[in-house]
Amino acid sequence: MRTRTQQGPRTSTRQQGGRRRRTVSAAAATAIGVMTLAALTPPASSSAASTSVSTSTSVSAAAAIARPDAVQQALNTLVRDDGMPAALASVKGRDGRTRTYTAGVGDLATHAPVPVDGQVRIGSNTKTFTAVVVLQLVGEGKIALDADVDTYLPGLVRGKGIDGRRITVRQLLQHTSGLPDYGMHIDDDELRDRYFEPRELLDIALRYKADAAPGKTWGYSNTNYLLAGLIVQKVTGRPLAEEIDRRVIKRVGLRHTYFPTPGDKTIREPHPHGYHRNPADGPLRDFTETDPSAGWAAGQLVSTDSDLNRFFGALLAGRLLPAAQLAEMRTTVPAGGSGLRYGLGLTSRLLSCGGVYWGHGGDIPGYETRGGATDDGRAVNVSVTSIPTDETAVQHVKDAVDSALCG
Image (cartoon, rainbow, N blue to C red; front, side, top):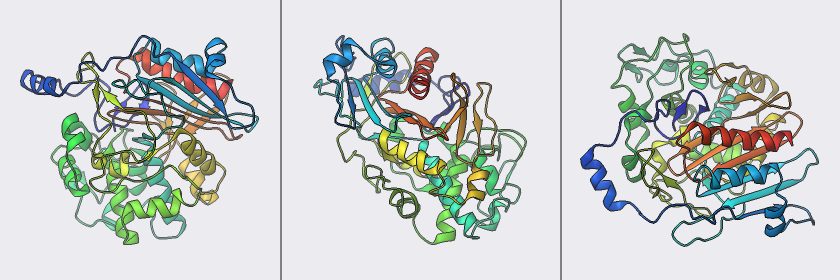
């Protein structure tokens, strides 16, 4: 779960804003080099692409290459120009039809094709699921948005300039608590290989001083959603994963979305491999099998682009929250200087064709997903199988989303 001010919420467990909080030492680089898959570079032919439509009409791969639409062109650019091993998208258009797209290869070692609508790790999109559960509990009278954290987790949140009696649940969901981000202090390889208990992650955050006083400024921090998840568990007496599954995933029929169980480093259904660079100009390494526990309430879920479209569409349509809680979720504050605004686990971004779309987005080493839905029923999510390492590639991901929603 990582952040980049220009792009908005991102979802590894690190700050991406200045590229990375620290470089890998020479000794660590040597150790990593032993593990590096040196052959993992996108092949020249990786612009091969396909498009499918969920009606009786289909578009062959050859036709898609010969006459690519704007979304296919955007995915091809991400592979050809930006070095993404693969790019996937699912688009629900104004006509109600769903179109799925792929570009690149699903496995750089074998050149296996990209699974259509394959599963990916969705990183910080998990935050919206967690926020929905919290807001459902608000609607049930079990949580109050303006109650302090100590109401539910007494004495737990104390540190340098940090006091849970001064931080509200609303500030957690809105990223205005001032809490430091535990994710900035976890290395990529530690994230991939180690299992973390949620309280361990909180302990990491509380070693550091507050970034700001509560309510003073917006600042993206995975620690906020870690605490939101702990509050859910305290109030319900049930594991967060069970509450997300019961209250969200099953309620709206997300058949390819799940919260990995402890120790589950795999992705269960057909999926493209995910790759990661550290440093940004280093070689791609396969990060497909990762212990996602460092993400937990902030970034642990696995899903597909189509399931995310269904989720955000159902959310905006009022199928997951009462009207009052959905209105709270959509009440936003500025989040950086790019026009992004952040509500309670939900973002809005301006479209080039007018209006806004609502979503979140997320990354975790190996995968990045961007997208959302509009109030009139359009939806898109775009996934790439490596986190973009320069602003041009970041912009191309945003362009793919905009092209799909404005086409």
